[in-house]
Image: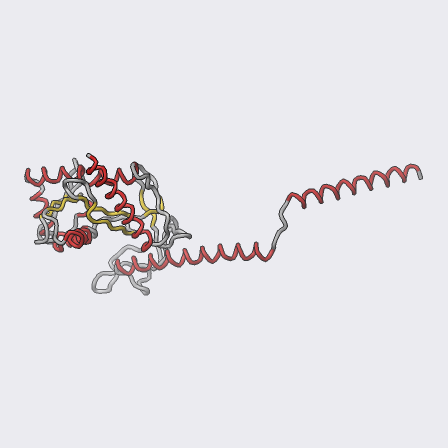
Length: 280
């Protein structure tokens, strides 16, 4: 009995210690709301499904623009509809594995960051005057390419000032035969054909007549002198927005709202710039 009594006391003490440990664990841990946890995870799954559907839709639109069709069997075809060799890696509308989407802002896109790397971003456009660095027009897109935006910016300048700019300076990112055609006769256009200090591919004058004409223009001393002023005119407002106003990311979500926020930021810079000039 003495032996059994000792064993029973030891067992009771062990059970009591285990009970105290369980009570302490429950006390320190929040009560688990199982339905809420399931709902939270289901909401996350729904958000992922919606983001995936957006990526697939964008890829489908890009594939259709390239001339693909639902029945192409992943085989490139010529204008006559016959296979022309090779094979597409993915079926129509299937994104690449590395493609990304954003759960909180469906309109934002992944863009290359200056200095390397990629971020979810928008592409802000500004047109500055040639005397005071005042931003005359500001637009914003969710496409990393600038190639189609120059006519939009020139029209925005006209809307703001009532007339087309006498001269428009732009870097090589805006170079396009369609852009040159759209702006013919509107403004004295000076657009770099290649990156500064680097050459460019040969231009087919038969199919890119206006591009060839711009390349010839950019060989003249007058055009080169004019284009050198672009950095002095266009880059300071961008630096002031970041380093003077401290604006480095948007507060809003959605393309329409972000476009409005961008214009407010540019307006704020203009007001500050004008106040500085008046004080001087």
